[in-house]
Length: 151
Image (cartoon, rainbow, N blue to C red):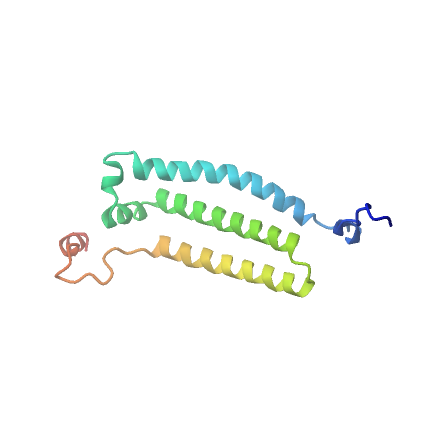
């Protein structure tokens, strides 16, 4: 090999493609579809929170409690949460696969990304669907009368 020749790229060392499911292709497709859906969900979220009624001046604990009391907004926020976390985790997995050359470290990092994304999805979903604004409210709280009227 001469001084001005380039070394073969790493991709030449990859094993030939097996006939199973092409997970990289489906990951690529997911990134495009979820990206488009996230744009719609995020801009809808921002429009309702910042432009409708009193806009940003209406954002407080009661506003969030009111949104989480409605199944439509619960599912909207959960869809946004799931899509964003899976989209981000898939992007991080791609970065790890591209730049980490040690197979064992790559496997550990991909598992860590998957576990943390899964944990955050479960935790976030539980928060959205089990949110109770009256939990732990005492008589000296500003929510006391509202929670007593709802009970």
